Length: 162
Image (tube, rainbow, N blue to C red; front, side, top):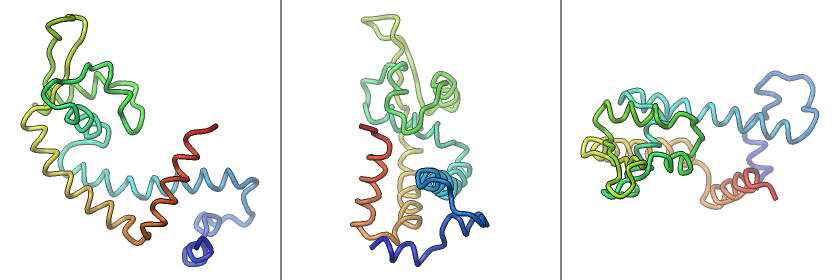
C-alpha cells in the first residue's frame, strides 16, 4: 500500500528541490508533517476568514458548545483545545465581544468564571460545521478508509511517546 502512495506522489526531497536525502528519517517525517499541516490548514484558514473567525476562536467556541448550557470554567478550556494557545482569556474576550460566548461568575464559587456559548455562537457552528466537513472530505477523501485509519493511528503514536 505505501509503495503506491510513494510512487504516486512526489517525495518531500523533490518538492523542496533538495539534492541530498535528509540526514535522518525522523527529520523527513517531521518536515512532511509541517508541510502537510501548512497545505491543509491554509484552506481551513481561508474558510474561517470568510466568516471573520480564526481556527483558535472556532476551537474555543466548539469546546464550550460541547458542554451545553451548564457552561465551562474558563480555566478548563485550554485542556480541550486541539492546538495549545496560551491566551485563552484573549480568545474568550474576542468571542464575547462578538456575542458568540457569554461568561459570568459561578454562584457557588465566585472565583470560577463560567463560559457559555450564545445562540449566535451556536448559529455560527451550525453554519460552519458542514462547510468544514466538506473541506476535510475534499482534502482527504482520496484516501481509503483503511489509509485514514492508519494515518490516524500513526499520528497518535507519534504524538504519544512511550
